Amino acid sequence: MDFPANTISQREWFKSIFSEVEPPHQLMYIDIPNEICRDQIEKRRTEQPERKTTDTTEMFAHVAKYFAEPADEEGFNLVIMVTKHRNAINPDRKKRLFSLFFVSGHRRC
Image (tube, rainbow, N blue to C red; front, side, top):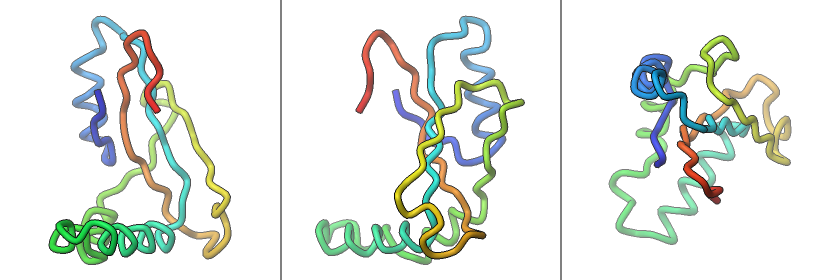
């Protein structure tokens, strides 16, 4: 299963669901500059024209302002993925958090 986990409240909700059974899981945290995210949005809009109305830089800016970096204290199995673009554009970049994965006997790619 794949869930967005960009805010503390989203992650608290997920934690409340599985805290009793403590299933194997990974919180995938992708360290990438906002500028690269916006470039990827533009590329996706070209490659998938049906997404032009929803995948916009304005929508990205709206969603990104709610992003909260995960902390070890939250109790997730945090996996930080650093991209080759890590400090390429702006060292003060925001990091992106994509998903909380519940792992059930197989790896998700």
